[in-house]
Image (cartoon, rainbow, N blue to C red; front, side, top):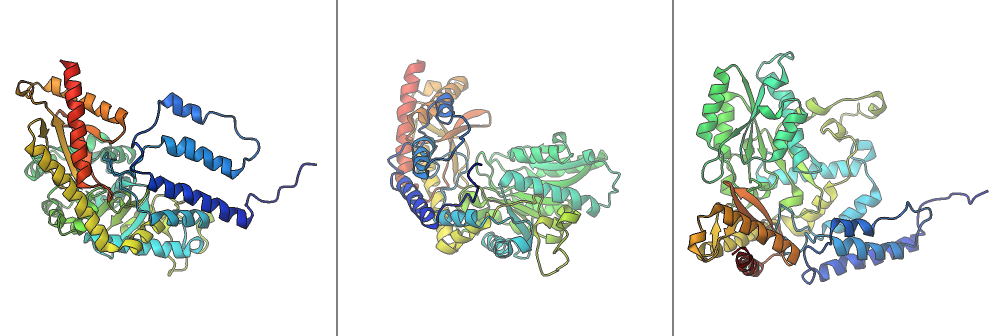
Amino acid sequence: MGKKFMSLDFDPEELRRILYKTSDSVVDLFKGMRARKVFQAGSPKDIRGLFSEPLPRDGAAFDDILEEINEKVIANSTMSINPKFLAYFTGGASQAAIPAEMIAAALNQNMAKWHISPSATELERQVIRWICEFIGYPVTAGGCIISGGSQANFEGLAVARKVQPQRLGLTDKKPLSDLLIYVSSEGHSSIEKAADVLGIGRENVIKIPPKDDHTIDCAKLRERIRADKEAGRTPFCVAGNAGTVNTGAVDPLDELAAICAENNLWFHIDAAYGGPAAGTEKAGAAFKGLEKGDSVTIDPHKWFYVPFEAGCLLVKDPAHLRETFRLLPDYLRSDVDKSERFNYMEYTFELTRSFKALKIWTTFKAYGAEALRKAIEADIEKIHHLGGLIDKSEDFERLAPVQLSVVCFRYRTQDKTKWTDESYLDDLNRRILETVERDGRFFVTGTKVKGKTAIRVACMNHRTTCEDMESLLLILREFGVRNAKQQS
């Protein structure tokens, strides 16, 4: 007979030793952060080869596994915690969240029902209230912590699809394909994806052209809604942007709220990126009207500096969440009749959810709202500093206003005869972006602004400094000169 199976657990003292040794790797990661290249990976084939092995038949010593993690995983990861990572919208991650993640993994809570996650459930509800208070949204709102902004936009529009047709007095026989969603053409792609999955259809996401500052043109929105109504179509939702991905533009939320009120439309606000800035003195005024949204998407893993993943959907009337997502098969009915117990499975699409709220809670508790506000304002200041340097230079050109912590610009050389050659400048800036990635000292990405290839720099890292911004511009200039010579 084979050896009798007992348990997968380590001896308590061995577990303690493993955790201590793992913590050394974590601390070393932060200690050596600035010395590391931000992008340090080889080719996909090289990385794939590191992990190509047969399914392990027998277990290995954890010290050997940790060594593999250090040498294969950490050594080939893009260092998003590095202050020179300035791409996408990636919060620098708070160290206070790291032990929270460890404890959450050890507790292994399933957030579906109160009786299997009592403290986790009540803690998450408190976190929702704190987020609301921070950004100026009604603290009586409902909400849940989910994977990210895309899922939050999906669930927000699912609530709108469930509730708003009833508000409009539509019958159940009214086809979903008649419903229209309005969003700026600068809106996030997840709005279209959600409409597609929800049966509304991408073709029913009406994209309204932006103004020169990249915010939605409310006059054109009004005109389109009026025309669609006259054509017998059914407007039901406006999705406003509170910090667009491309340029950080914040739509005039107060005016959008008025348009929604005039036309009896659901008002969803995608504040996945910009939402936390609503709680700051420096940027708060731009978010006037946020409190009027029927639903709001906000990502703690962006500007609350919480590690991935932690998205959030807020809905002003919690009953709308329950109306949308409550479905109780027999195997989940035990314990649901106790009214004082709050079961999250009735308020979100997901049944099984991990205890993501703990790392948000520890971040708020460890730093406090004021420190987070100052960190957000500092990020905005750093990007405005970079924008100022760009404006003062001759060889760089800013392509969009700097509203929050994003700036889009391009290198155009000192040769003024090249400044109107769009094909040349597009190719040059694509080459610069490729060179930056290969070099690895900084990590930035590109985008298109009014058809022009742009270098896009976004700062959501409390470790980044104005000196880093100055160094970035010098490196971009160096690579610009080098690539321009190669193109000549």
